Structure formats: structure tokens, C-alpha cells
Length: 257
Image: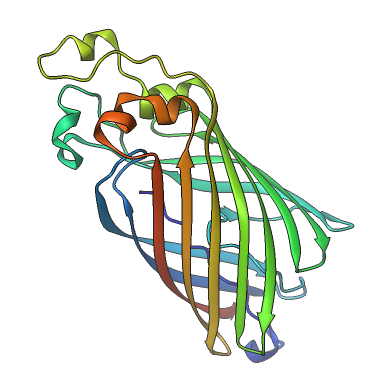
């Protein structure tokens, strides 16, 4: 289960003006599907990380943003590299996966681009990420977020999501080969093709416990679509509705390099 936890930026005034960089480290605990399309749920933990220059403006972020660093920032448009995580899957996750290939946990890398239609309030974002370690292809995630502060300590956000996978991704997580299907008790052959794999919605509430400590609660709901929904891995073993809830705690501090 890939982590949704993303460190929340905090202001620099409490960190002292001697800091050159603001580093935010955190840890998130999530409860959600054991693998894409699964109806079985479990807990997972994942660290989060964020870094920005001391003089960069403090920006809001969503809990399902992956780890990124902006290299371009012009007129509300930002872009740069991004790193993410890929889900794993093994036979121990579901007895019905007998004979179906496992998927190893992995990393992906790519680029992100986002546009602030209203500075620090309304954002449109996209990430394009290619698997670098487990051969699970390319994904494209798009979404929008509305950020609403309440008082000085609370920040709420919400927004829609859509995710696309190429052929390699869909075959890795939702395809079943004829060889796999030929085994006794196995699921039938399924040729999963590229396309829209899910639509969903993410909400979160972040609370500044102290000037440099932030507690965040979040929920992401996705509805699998297309071949991701039609695959026997989802339709016979699992569920089209996928929901992840999580909590994360992060701390920001200044670092001189």
C-alpha cells in the first residue's frame, strides 16, 4: 500500500532566521487495501520528507502529494522532479492469488507540474511517474485541491483525483496471463490495457500542535474504473471501492549547509 503521507509545510518565523533550508520529517500510519483492487485491509507506515529554501514562500500541500522539489516557479506555475512509491502484492495478501505473479514494492520517479489559480488556496496538479525498480510502468495522476485555513492552527483541504496507467502498469497489477490462468483454481486470463484506472477524492485536516509540529488526518477514496475494475483480481477477489485513511506527525527544523 503506497503511502499518502506528505509533510505539511510550516512557517519559518519560529525556526530562526539563521536557517538556510527548512527540512520537514514525518511519519504516517495508514489503514487501507493491501494491494490495488484488494478487499482486504491492513496497516502500513511510511516516512515523509520535505525540503525548501529558507526564503521560499510557505506553500500548502495535499496528503497524497509525492516527494517533490520545485525547480521552476513562474507566475503561479511550478514544476520539478518527483519521487513516489509503488504497491507490493504477494500470495499472502489473498488466498485467491494462487498462481498469480507477485509484485515487489518499488520506487518511481518523474516530474510534477502544478498551477495556483488562487495563491495557496486553489491548486491544479499533475504527476507523471515511471517505475524504476519493479517494472510496473508509467502512471499519470491529476487532481485539484481547495485549501481553507480555520484560525491560526487548522488547515483543511479537499479535492478530486484521477489516475491513469499505461499498459505495463495495468498488466503488472491487473493482468493475468494464459500460463497463470491454466493452473488449477486460478483466475481466468485477463489482458489489462492502458487507460483511466481510478477516480476519487481526497480530504484532510492539519493541526499545528506547536509552531514546528503538525498533526494531519486524511482520507482518500478511489473508485477503480476500466480494466482495473473489470480485472478478475478486482471483480472476483477484491473491490472497486478503495479507501485509505491515515494520520501523520511531522516536524520542521532549520539546517545550514
